[in-house]
Image (cartoon, rainbow, N blue to C red; front, top):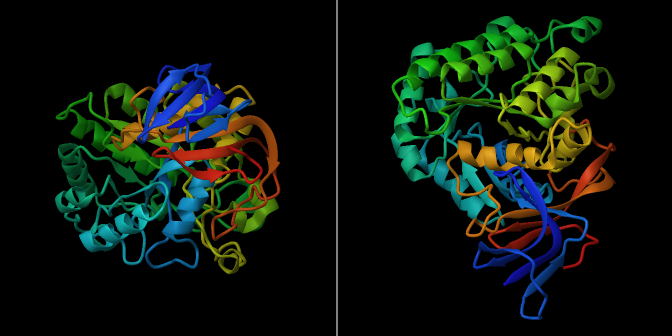
Length: 434
């Protein structure tokens, strides 16, 4: 048995936080209350000054395995996740080969089981991620795919999109969409606006994101009319970044579509001006946009239009990021800084409370993928993060293979002390004691 003493327990479902002790036994939460350390517990953690919350769930990570393991692999990605407080991550399908077949899917599942956390695979929506024909979604779901996505490549065939949505609703699994119409983009990764003009490039305008988001929200609305509205979302709008896209999701939800949306910490923290300071480390798809867009994201996080915070953890080598701005790949790592950015930018600035932040980083992501986690109650899985919400630290050392982040060297608020998965400590801060 395992005792966590003197912590503040956060319940994201009740949006409550109270000083309690927690007992873990046989991989489950066995008690929440006040308990004496009577010497019978195998492990005791003194969580004084710390929050005790459900382990974080990230619905959007790239572990680059198979095919690009010089950037990241499932082992190092899982280690970075545990250091960031994550006990469950959902891997994207754009590997090499892509996860469009059961053999590659089983490889990801097998490698994931070797880590200390839950590594769950999505499968591709289309064969070869070419947007032409659907994968065998039934077989892939039966083999363990928790959802489907061609993330990194937008689906441009409307009939294929509708067919995928209808099948996803039947299978009760979500689809996650990368919403950027390439017809509007000349240079991806940089917002079309004042900064791109200063740099002498065209960039990627918000209409590229807005137009596809509107299309898929309306198709989802049509498909939703024939499904169980009380079931989970069938469409997740990934890494939302623009005011217009937020309004499309808000409208679709109001009309009854089974849609949800995720936002990354970098999109709610930074604007396009970061490109002038950080160069390729601030290049991502969709790009960082304007302050007006950022404020729209913050408001949507507050009112629930945006349901989840996801990292879009996208490792790249230093050599790749050293290329010229228009040639370097898009994306940044995020697993080890996401919680701290949420506390620094959202909680400390009074946009969200700590329980609300946990709902967007644990409970709501778990609900998207129909997972039995993200809850803080007796009988729930013993997947927990224990963190000091007031501790300042500098983002300097990462367990990820890659270090492509504009937050390197930044002082952040909120430090993970321990991460517990299935009742076992899978990460502890180097100076902590249990």
